Each structure stands twice: as C-alpha cells, then as structure tokens.
Length: 157
Image 1 (cartoon, rainbow, N blue to C red):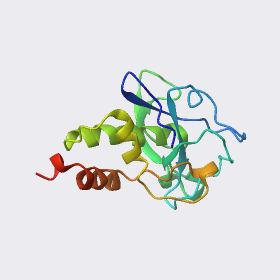
Image 2 (image 1 turned 45 degrees about the vertical axis):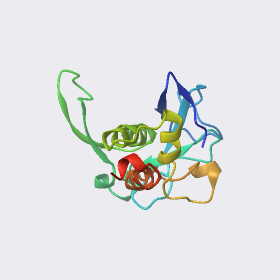
Image 3 (image 1 turned 135 degrees about the vertical axis):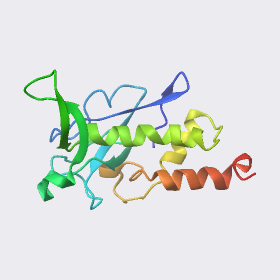
C-alpha cells in the first residue's frame, strides 16, 4: 500500500465510481490513499472496473442485490436541502469513511505509532490477491487493532 501522509495524518479518498481504468481525484492527489468499494460479498461493487490508484477497499454497499445492501446513512434531502432523511447508498464515497475511522480507533486503544505505521496496520486486512482491483486488501478494523496489540508492547500492559 502506498503510505502517503501530509503533516502526519493519512488522507483517505474515494476514487470515484466511473468505469475507467484509473482512479479519479481526490484519490489521485499525492497525499491521498484511494479507497474502493466492495459489497457484503467482498466483491467489487458492480459500478467499478479495474483501476490504477486503488490502495485499499472497504464496505461500500451493493444495491444491485437489494436496496438494503447499500450503506444506510443520514443525508440531506434530495429535493429539499432543508430536510434530511435516511437513505441507502453505494459507492466509494461510502467506503472511504469506513477506512478513515480505523486510525482513530487505533489511537483510541493506545497505539502511539506514526501515521505511516498506522497505515500499514490498516492494510492488515483481508488480502484478495488482485492488487489492481483490491489494493492492499479489504480493510479489517479488528485485524488492525489485533496487529497493533500484538506488535506494540505498550498496548499489552
């Protein structure tokens, strides 16, 4: 995985949902880590194609297998921005926040590693084999915490 940080903090970005052979901005920025999307079956969401620039993947939903298989989120009303509601969505914009929360989780359990080292722990997820499609693998927050605990003596005390 590319470990890109600026000012000590990793930036996770959605690479877009277009059917292109490379990620889009903001994931292509120098200090961004591109996060693609998988459904509950661990397979890339159907709107995605093979991309260059994918560093990790995370849960982003797949509504083609049913509306309830999207990511339920509170969002601004589509027809009236003064109202909000809960709707199911899918895509890389739903996946990137799942990854962005993992560094905070690591810090909350006492991991005092640098941002680069925490990024390596985040990549300690489920390897899928095809790095073009899945980058370093599907993010697994529990595996990242376990890896931090097993390799950082200060967390085991």
